[in-house]
Length: 412
Image: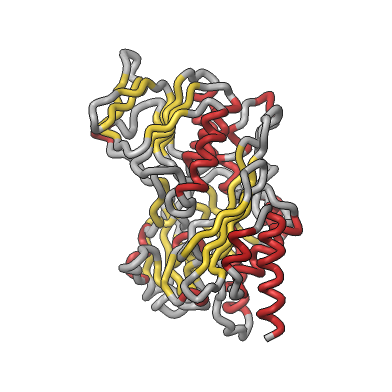
């Protein structure tokens, strides 16, 4: 028998990326809603509704999180007092949103964090009556929420401590292109800034963000997107990675305790192709790690998990948008960068190491054929002619040069 303890959620599992994208669109611009994005519809699989779990003999415990774990007796205890006996246990508790401290206003009415449907519903309600929106954080959440706020025609400001948006991936040049696009849509940026505190108005709701330099930004709605942390819950005894947090596992997602596995955001696993321990907070890894883990658990399969890092974003996709944005990145963003294209609409960035091997590639507004080339390039890491790549006059030419390098490497 398979039992799926589904934490605090009242819904069957769903694909979280939708919550900061289509879910936040105004009602007149075709927002995403459940059951439209239950797992695993995003990867072309069956939509796993409550009926799907029932039909497949899986018991789902809604709004009843695990609060205690005993590895010796192989039991779990839920908040309702239910005791679950297991033979094999897969921990897929994921992450929770990092929060601002309550003492600086992190819990004020009108301050939002996005991790589940209830969070997104609360934010949609606020956006419907908002006038001035402040987004704290210049990463994925910040960019996607700010783009959605544009669909509501709201005064929107993004505040972050770095020099440019998406600093963990974007180069300064690439970030500049996106920042200009957001500014064309009315979004304002305050860079290199830290929050001192969030202040409330006479009604008790957030009314402004006070920065460390003393400046004040008015806001009746604040969205905090400052990262996430793995939900370890009662499972610390299983073994936590001191390097990246999360539950440490091997290449088959086995923890240090026999019969216990960890997958998805919470798993600290060996990233084979780059020879390091990492955690990946992404739906693609969540799907693939789950598949690999279960295959290893139910069969004699011992092939190590060999994951290729992949990230993407889709913004400004609401009805009536002047320009829809969709980029993809594969590989590792280390080494020299070569940027090709004018962002009108395409742009590509290639990361190349000291041996002229292509380590990572980013593409905006590519065709399906062009996007399908990216993982091949990042996985094979062909030696490229940097001079040719730098002289490419278009994204299409640059991708063809990279494709030729891939073919040449295969022939060697």
